[in-house]
Amino acid sequence: MFKLKYTLVALMLMISACAGGQKNLAIDVVKKDEVKEVYDPFETTNRRIYKFNYYVDQYVLIPVTTTYEEVAPEPVKKGVSNFLSNIGEISTFINSGLQLKPEATGVTAGRFVINTTLGILGFVDVASGFGLPKYKEDFGQTLAYYGANEGPYLILPVLGPSNLRDLGGLGVDTYTFNQIDPLGFDDHEARNYIYNAVKGIDARSKVPIGYYESGSPFEYDLLRRFYTDSRKIKSGSFKDKDND
Image 1 (spheres, rainbow, N blue to C red):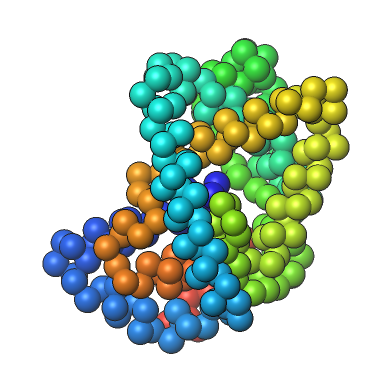
Image 2 (image 1 turned 120 degrees about the horizontal axis):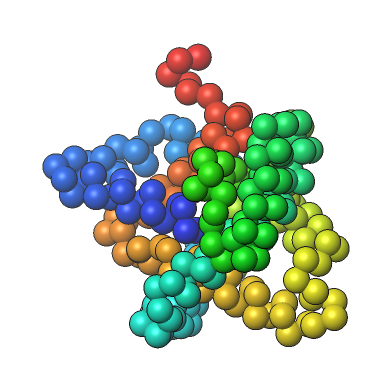
């Protein structure tokens, strides 16, 4: 669901383009050979999980998120989002280092130190005001950096689009985060549940569209293509076939 934040936003923009006079855009995209080139051997199961995610989103996530949006003051929501983003710098720092990216590693370390101290544990994003850009790296990208194939496309329950490589990367990132334990989960198990619940609500609150709201009969196909290409771009392995 966290990754769905980006894929659904992009999907919404693609469908909006269709409504703006390019009505056959979605159909043309799906007809292209590269759409079918995404390795999706579990498509039948993936589509069932996609539908399951729709029900979870419709009857659990959206009601909870809507309540959060209505009740929480804007400064609180912004602070929570900043705090979660700051905690995420830990994973980015580690994976930037593993990918031998000194600039991203150094900037990420600087952002974390500045926001954790001057930004009151990260609730205020002071570092961006200092001109330090935010990077985003995960172990799935690290695996791609060292040549690991993406493997079959997957739809994860609740979490949304992924592939075998990114699923493995998510496992490693989660394990590493738990080992570092910056929020003291070992001593306070309830914090773990609260953290993940708040993280999920924050992520879902930033998605302006839900499952099956794109208006396209090819939503699954478009989302699969976009996710695959976006991950290739992030990992630096994307190649424009028209320019080969």
